[in-house]
Amino acid sequence: MLSTFKSLLLVSVFITDTYAGENTQSLVQKLHSPDVSVRTLGVQIVLNNHLSLKDSIIRSTLVKLAESETNGSGWGEQEEFPVYQNYYGLLIRTVQNIAVQFHSDEAWDQLVLSHYNDETDFSKWLAGQPEAINRSFYFASDQSDVFRSRAVALLATGLAICQVTRQGEACSSIIPKSAQILNLLRENSLGVETSSTRAESVWGLGICGGKEELPFLESLIKPDSNPWFVMSVHRAEKRIKDRSKLPG
Image (cartoon, rainbow, N blue to C red; front, top):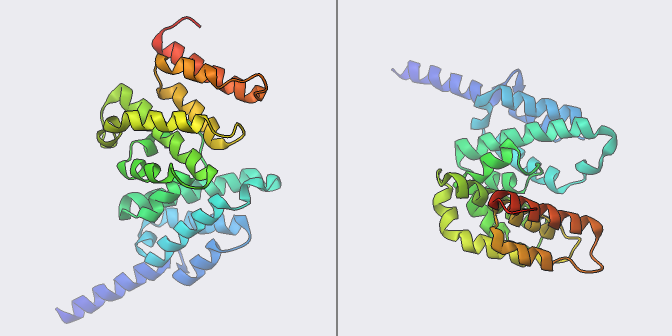
């Protein structure tokens, strides 16, 4: 019995410490490489070897890497943007696995704050996760304009989905707070015209607000308003009118 236990222990250590020929140290080095193609390879190794996520060092490295990439300058590196975008997408997939499998608050934070397009399958999935919605309420009052913008966009997406389906775990926490979410969107729609939070809030009212929001949205347009902002308000108004079957 003891020899069997030792054999299992040795196998366990081998599985934990080596992945596709890489040990923990060499994989972490790849993930910290200044070369985006090497970092991509490191992330792909993790995605292709699900046992690697059992290693807490690798999980921690990936979550911290997602944080630095989301808040870093990678999105401004235009020359390699397609390469970087592919790498970032793979990285967020691994963080998604960490959040779901290991119930990591840090991983959920990075998913909420990550760069993704609104109205994608990913944003709809994220808006249906109670952990992400709870973290969004927290970040909705953050000092960072970027953090607030991601949070209000996700809350609006969640509310829009729950208004239609009223199903899913997240809806049990979203529906009772519908008025709070709408108030949050209105308050942030009054912010600085160039802020990303204001833009996301106007968009959010468009996808989850009722016809009673139309006078408020119209009041946001001033004689000196930026044409881009005016266009975003009109798009939000059109969404509400289309949903309420009102004349354009």
